[in-house]
Amino acid sequence: MEQFSLISLNLWNTEHWQEREKCIVSFLQTFDADIYCFQEVRPQTLSVLDASLTKYQRVEGDETGWRNESSIYVKREMFSILDLGRIDLDMPEKDRGVFWVELKTKGGEALIVATMHLTHQLNADEMATGKNYRHKEAHKAAEALNKLGERKRMVICGDFNDPIHPSRIFHEQAGFQDVFMLLGLPAPVTFPCPFLTYETFLVEAIDKIMIRGAIQPLLASSPHFMIPGQVLSDHWPVAAVLKLLPNV
Image 1 (cartoon, one colour):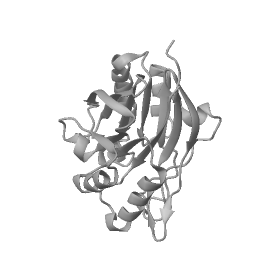
Image 2 (cartoon, one colour):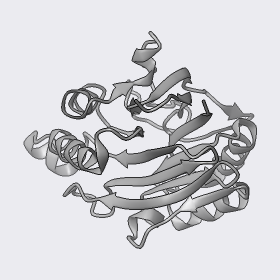
Image 3 (cartoon, helix red, strand yellow):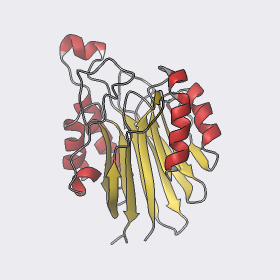
């Protein structure tokens, strides 16, 4: 059966962009993943990604969030796009949500890939009230993902901003499993990357890749990629090699 590689990375909008741009371009050229899922994109960063990922199609819907929050790039030679959409999660960050694309491989196999960026723990309302946004967001996302097709192959990824509850909810409510857990690996700490952020009091495994259906993980890692004087983001990326199994 066919296999593919996927990388998820929070691009940290345009913070310290001049200190990161060359590193990001080098990372994309070095890893050459078949699918990239990004969070915190901006028009300025998308222009760099578009110029670097010339072998890819950027998935884009009508909503502004596709250009201001999350984006998915897929290799043209490997995938064609069947459908796409954005799931609104009633978040404080109005352009965020679950951004998904249904793909068909050259061998005729179908799968859905979705990326999301849940609300940060240090948002002003949560700091003042203690109200947790991510529980509600994860439940709403799981319900909507189930409506897309509980028997379809599906990969979800992104910055969950919580090491426990979104993954638990996606597993219990929608049957997703974490690729690191399936491979018997500890979930890697993905935040913070200490070279450019002062939030070193947060040490969390919050960037995730989860799968459902006839998909098998072959490899998963969190590459601590850097070049002299530059790193990618305040997050480390997560990466996986996945194999499509026969649908039964």
